[in-house]
Image (cartoon, rainbow, N blue to C red; front, side):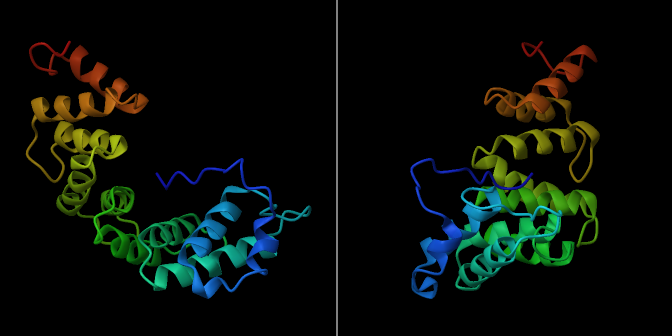
Length: 201
């Protein structure tokens, strides 16, 4: 799961034109917002009519890279997402992991979750369920529902942590209580197997 980059309906300008109307290097907030807006498709197309990538998407990556290199954690995470998806840059999980780690080390839940996911799958890093659990726990402890669900799954399967159905149920429930659909399904499966623990059915 990547970051939720939403659209701001109050922004009545084309962000691509706005980028060229200010000195972007002086304002990290503008750099980040510009990159996020373009990647979300707000105000300008990310592909041309023939399906090729538009100039805007490449410029968005450049804007995020400047902000990321100056230490902006959200920009670092979103740049990681671009590399993970091959969006505006060649797909490169190693680069994705590098940028996720920079943001995760600043204590942000989303990149911690993203980095944990790479360790789960072995994308860009050596597959390591212990490291996956470590990063997912950091995000889960901050209340990030997707991380809580994934951490529950690791306990459910005994991957990177001792198999513990009670712990799995605990984390599934925390995520399910926030409306996470996958966690609700996982908790239901655990309960139907009779492994959800007392009071969790």
